[in-house]
Length: 132
Image 1: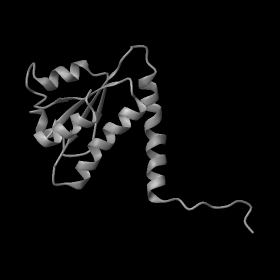
Image 2: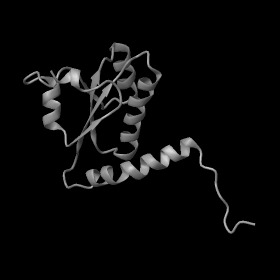
Image 3: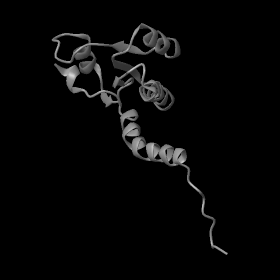
């Protein structure tokens, strides 16, 4: 007989525990700073025919909503369309969506970068083609 019971870890429970363990310290420190409302800029790629992209961005936004409800979230969306934007805005009415190139002087993306306190690069297409 074993002195303790071994619990079978599923892939899902392992990933959930890992994400919480790795992300919690950074997000907790970010949330506890003195300013009344912090702004998170989430950069993500979105290929509407890729099931992974369709799941990652809303999931990340839900995570931010749940664990940082006081934070303002700006989504720097790449390759979304009007239907995707409408779906996100229906679910997250306080969400701000910006699009464009980082290199565009005075553009929406540069302004969002200036206003953000924390930049989070999500999954999806590489950032390189959106900088220039």
